Image (cartoon, rainbow, N blue to C red; front, side, top):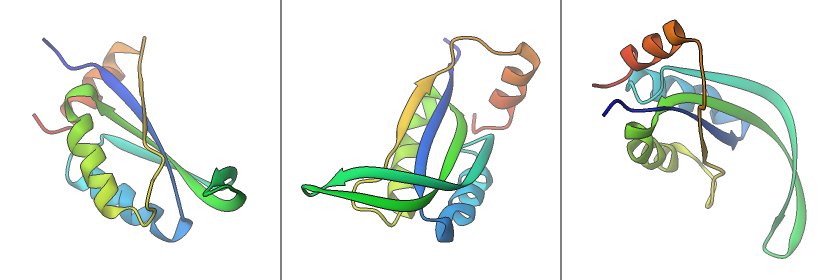
Length: 106
């Protein structure tokens, strides 16, 4: 059964965003990673409302690589509990989805 495309969202400090993006693409866990800088996050952490300037990583991968990708993200990420959310792709341009599959580990 072919793997399905997956979009993974992960916020991180700007200081490590490029390192994480390159590692995931170089290791073929991601076909592409978009970095959206200057994301302002407001969240509750340990009963306090916090605000942080972060970079949002939009990671393109497949469902069969998610577990390995999550493990690698956790190893590279400086947060105790990083945001790592995988969203299935319901539809996509077939040539792009073929490229995505070909750019990843077999």
